[in-house]
Length: 372
Image (cartoon, rainbow, N blue to C red; front, side):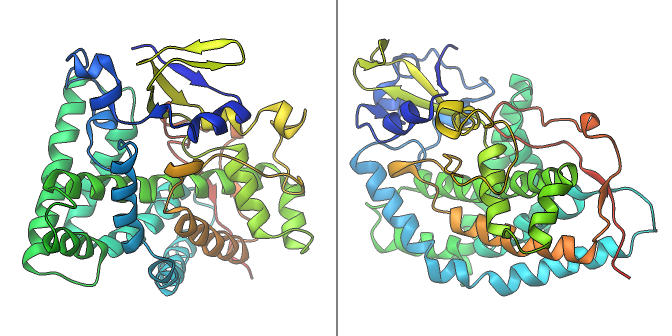
């Protein structure tokens, strides 16, 4: 499958707000409409879902409005005590590890924090979390086989349908119950497929981005001690760390797919009607013409930390405030508790995820030395 990768920050901003660009393959991708995209394609779920991620025009507005009403600033802020509690519990567990013994910080800290938060937000049960994680990891793994991709998709939908069935019988104060109630009040607003696929989007995207944000922020500070010193001495803030990490190592490097509704001319290049487009967020946020010749450097003192990590325009991520809050609580707590925190392996030995979508490490081995 061939697609245009848009790596220019300026061009990507234009395309993300251009009404001639759609995310709906059912209307605007001839290869999907004609049945050329088989269900065993590993990225099939990225284009086949029916939620605001793949909606266009009025349909996108309708679905986004529904989610935005559930994902309010009040509900996001209400997660703060829970985030603080989970952060403390995870850090206490890290402190209990044998002195000098390497710990995988991605597995023991960066991952469990956001999955606990998003699970509580949507009412996901404890027994579903391991399978949910396996399936979400599979969605972002772009090296799996077609057979593995189909198993992941089947299992993920089974988990989400079970969640909907349970919450329909026993509703609670969670976003799944809220979305069900909105549908049941007016069935024309949200179909059953849209309901399940909206949960898929919110739960998977709701933690994967934060996992990679924490992963890269920790790695960046451990490999740039001068930058860590700027934070510890109060010359710069943790917000500076978070925004520069989001710019320097976009947690989602590339996002499929968008489609040209009609022929589009961009700087002498024509994207023809029906052709697919990949938003290359990672590359766009490092563009020298936009960020300067040191765009590849991690610098929290950078005056312009503008980035496209959470998207731009109508598809801007509704969960961005939650991700920023989680990082803003977790990072200072971790570095305060472990002032001698260090990588357990040379940086070049850190292995990337098997994905051209998700940008993170397979493991993040560190040595945690608590403050005395």
